[in-house]
Length: 82
Image 1 (cartoon, rainbow, N blue to C red):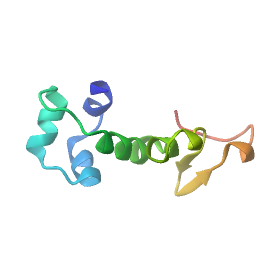
Image 2: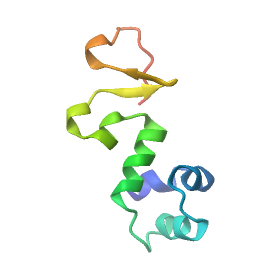
Image 3: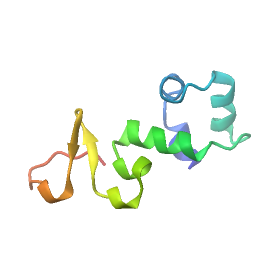
Image 4: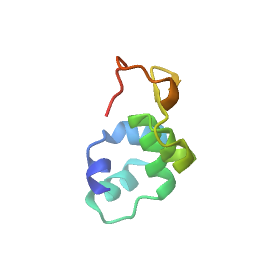
């Protein structure tokens, strides 16, 4: 999970989670555990994965361009981010 946190800009983490930069530096260094709630919120914000916040029942659903994509409605030509 550290790779996920280190790959995100610190200012974005602060904006999304409301944490201060000192705590974020500790998360990135691995000297402080990142709360599961922060990870889920960041996954929703960064990757658009609805299941990150809402649970396994939402697996395959994702947000992109302010829209919720539903697996059953997915077209072959969809442009989902990975």
